[in-house]
Length: 158
Image 1: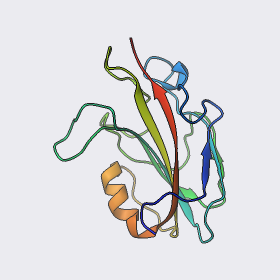
Image 2: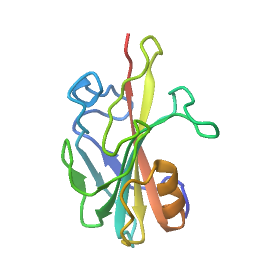
Image 3: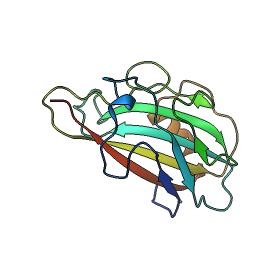
């Protein structure tokens, strides 16, 4: 299938699609990941990955765009939700240069940024090593991705 939207649904109790991300989940607040739940995973799903990417951020690496805030994977297929400040599963490296969640914190006066939380359904449960960047994760799972969808939140600093 590759990277195409599926019928899978991703929601959060913290914000609605297209809505503002509460300060609690940003670099200006407690900086904890929001809770998420999902449904309608494709048949054959064996694991999930969840990422957060801000395409509105200024270019930070030649050949890449935006800013990666979170890379979480090795989530078993029987999991359909994760709690706020999740500490289970495997974390990759964000563009903050460390593992784990790093919430929105766009430059002052840069306007509204859109944060794409992507859920990937994979047809493999082979464990991936910790510390993968978003781009390394996508290289590893591209041929195993059987479904994906997103939830978009917004945030801006004055």
